[in-house]
Amino acid sequence: MRELAPAFWERAEKALKVARAVLSLDPDTAASRAYYCAFYAVSAHFASRGQTFKRHSAVEAGVHRSLVKAGAWPRDLGAKYSMLVELRRTGDYGTLQHVSPEEGRDAVDAAAEVLQTVAAANGWTLDEPDV
Image (cartoon, rainbow, N blue to C red; front, side, top):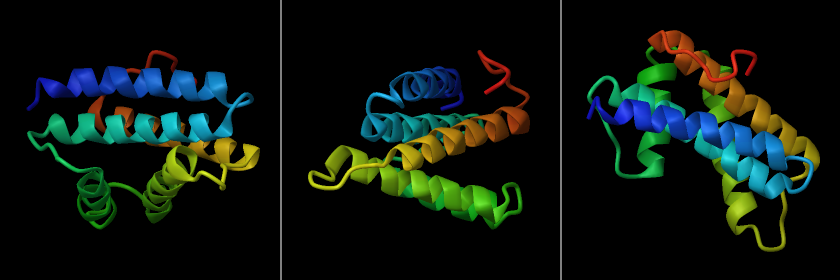
């Protein structure tokens, strides 16, 4: 499981780059990629500790149980992760609903914060330190 962490981490960084690149063109896609940035970053964090999950909902539950409730993350960061989950649902499956440009920007900012937090907690470096 620990060998999965670098692969997840690489995907997290790439997802954030894509989210930033498409933000002005398509906030739905930006929100989806921002969610995946956070999802992969958190998955890398857990994998580095020998833990993986089979469902996205299990990763979100792990964020709240193992990171927020344990005091490793502030509550607002857990709320931002949950916001990313919801915006991804809207962006990917909303059909008549769309992520607004402001929500897209919030998603990209939240994903960057999750990425930075995971990097700091694990002593990992970022491709772009000014994430």
